[in-house]
Structures are given as structure tokens and as C-alpha cells.
Length: 546
Image (tube, rainbow, N blue to C red; front, top):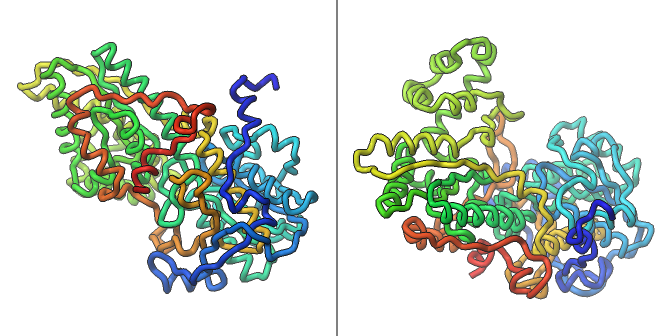
């Protein structure tokens, strides 16, 4: 225990709360089937790609008796993609679930992501090993990775591994892409008549894996609370020193859920929501002007300080920037060698893109130009997390204020990026309970030979007493999207709903927050104490449930 602080040692002993239907063990769960389902879009195309698993019913769990007799379950588990608080508890839920079916059930932890499954690289997760990781953050129990399972030869290697270890099920814990891969693998196994279920669990701190059946992904609650505590500390510092603007970039490439939740928790003076920027078709200059208006308004009141929240993926939501990035992605792929060798890379690139985009690129600070021209990710796209959007906005706001004869104040800014700080925090009670329940639900799906499903728990705002556990066919969450020049089935990402309760609550208050120091201080995550403090849900979830 020498590596454990008093808090982490105490967390190891925490027993997560379960939905009522799961409290008598996996054999004490009766499954109930709903109506036949269909995908949210592109039904004909999705059905053609998933002939064996498409149309499966939603499964709900109830207290009762399993229709499948007890047997030894051999289950493999994979952590896929970026870390999220609660991953270890999903594995703990699977472990406890299959052990409740039969004491000789075995859990194989495939190491370092899907590649571990493909190559048969695993560790045997024993009770002693599992107990070291309960209620802890991170994915270090078996490691994670971003290998995509998408080729026939990869699927065939997975089949060899499944047969070698007599696997009853494989559980893939990941985000939208990882769960899409899980669904594709499930379909392939079904077509090859491999008696091994493939089940997914919804993970991502970004909060963009959600829909009518998946209310939130695990990890979002803890990450948002972790960032909110840091933002609140900075807000108090700003209000104490009264001389700095703090521009804070937050995780969330594809959606602004983290930024919106943090704004609701901390009441910053400015918070940009990418989805609103796209809906309003705002230019970069418009964004800078509106931010500068707030800075000037506060300066006129003698307040040369403030806090601004900026979503990580903002640049891809600004229409003109999105077009520029798209053209850069296409042209860098074809002229990479020429650009790499050039002394003036910007001049070379501008030969191959439209005039308006070339002018935009040249207008950006040199550092941002270089970041836009960096090596692409494995998908051929710009690495948005490497673009220092917060620094870009600081430079452009500074330039805009300098051009205004009406601005008589001072503008001195600090920049921050909160990303990794939230991915491996000790999970909140909500995430510890929720992720454990997801793992236990995955064990129920495995026991009942159900494949192509994602473990799901709904009615989350009602507390564990009101939680409803079950499984949702992954194919019903899919649509077709263009990837690498091909139409691919993918789980549709959930963007911030500008007509939803969380955004409306934010929009109603942001003018007041801009003008005043209404900073809210949620404090650090509390693990012990009154339920209303240590078991509180995110404000996003609370507002969406109303």
C-alpha cells in the first residue's frame, strides 16, 4: 500500500452502487426484449452491412432469473482509445459479474488496446490483481491503444484468439469509433458462426457518445468536475489579482459538451460553444470582435481581467477555417514532399488552395500557420489538439483592441490547456457507480449470448435506485459517413443541442456573467459525505432530464 495516499487507499474499499435489477448477481437478472430496431439513418445501407445483427431488439433487465443456465464464462476485455475515469470499474463490474455466474469464470485482459486482442497478448485478471485497481483512474490495469480492427485478416486473427481461449464474449470499452469497430467485429463473428459475443461499453470524456438510449458516456462527469475545479481556482485568482485575462482551452474536438458543462459549473465571462459558432456561420473576425467587445466592456468598468473558455475543436466549426483545413488536408496529402522541402511552406501551400483560403492562412500568426501544416493524424486530418487556439485568440484579440481608439484599458492574457489533467482522475462516485454498472451489464449480455450490443444504463438522474440497466443494439446508433473517400458505418456523434436545456440555461446567463464576477466555485470532487454533495450528477445531465 506504499503507493497509495490515504484517499486512494480508502477508494479501493468503496463498493459501487448498482441498479436494482443487478443486485442479485448476473443469474438474478431476467432479460426482456423490446421491438425490432433500425438505425437512426441510412437504414437500407446499414442493414446490408449488418445482415446478422441489424434489427435486434433493445434489451432491458429486471430482477428475476436468468433463462441461461450457469456456466463458466471466459471473457476478454479491451480498453480502446483515450483514457476516461471509470475504465477500471467497468472491468471490475465485468469481473464481479462473471464470477457471480461461476467461480471458475475467467477474465482475459488484452493489453494495450485492440492490438492485444488481435495478437493474443493478455494477462489473466485475478481477484488480487483486480482489487488493486477498483475505483481508481486511468487505464493502466491493461493499457489502451488506438489500433482499428477493420481488415478481414485482423478479424480472422481475433477469431483464432477467441477460439484458442474458448471466449464466451469480448467486451470493448471505447468511444464511438471503438464501439463501431466492436459492432463490425460482432457482425463478422456472427457471419462466421463463432460462438463468442462482442459487446461494447460507452466511454469518452468528451460526452459526444450519447443518444436517446445512452444518456452519457462514463468519464465525462469526472473530467468536467476536474476541469471545473481548476477553472474556478483560476477565476478566483483572476478576481484577486485583477490584472489578467485567462484563455482556457478545454478537451472536446467534436463537440463542446465539456466546455458547456464547465461554464454552467463556473460562470466564466466568456465561453465559446463550437456548435453555436457553426450555426451562426461566424467568421474568425466575428468571434474576435465579440470577445474584444466583452474585454472592452469590462475594461470600461475598470475590470482588466476575466476568464474565457474555448473548446478544443473550435477551429473546425468556424466555416472559413473548416474550408481552409479541408483544403490543406487534401493538398498536403498530394504535395507533402514539396511542402516539406520548401523554405517558405506557406507560400508553397497557397499555390494549391483557393485565393480566399490562402489569404486567411497568411493572416494567421506564424505559429498557428506552422501548426496547421504539421504532420496529419492517421486519418489524414489536421491534429486539432496541437493547434493552440487559445493563443491564436489572445493574439487576435490583442491586435483588435490595439486598433480600437475606444479601448483605454489594459489587456494582458495567460493561456491554459486542460486536457490530460482530467482523463485519469479518481472517478467521481457517479462515474465509479455508473461504469461498474456498465461492466456488470456487459457480463449479463455475455451470459445471455447477446452480441452487437452496447451496455446501457438509463434514468441516470434518478440515482442508482431508479437506474434502468440493459443493452442497446449498436447498429441502431449508426449512420453512413464519408471516411477516406469511402462511405463507412459509424456511430453518430452527439453535438451540443442549441435547443436543449443546458445550452438555454447558459445562454440565459452569459450576459450577466460577462459583466460581473459571478464566478461559481464547485470545489474538488467529494467522495465521502452527504449524498447531495458526493453523489451529485453533472448539471448537463440534470438539465437534460427536466
